[in-house]
Image (tube, rainbow, N blue to C red; front, side, top):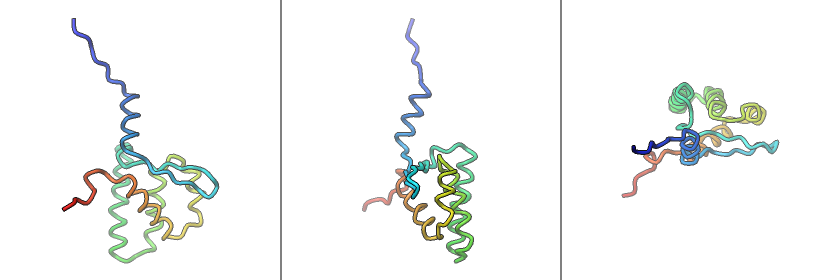
Length: 119
């Protein structure tokens, strides 16, 4: 009889994590916090992240910067692999720092389709 092909979930997960790179953030305390790519989040976390990202645009357009920091903080903690280290790092961050980190994370983990087309 024919041979059966085995699909290894462990191997596949490793490949997916390799393909959809995370973003590494080094804290001032010397810890490395990985900010996961959106495509590596589970369903509930992805929904939350997309909701926060959508509300960030609304807050920016509305010009209400005071609403940004809690949203940025929630987003970063949602995608972080070490929330304790990140919480400690973010304690004294101004809004600009959080925006800068979120922008860098988005750029580093951007989906292929999201790249601007040449032409």
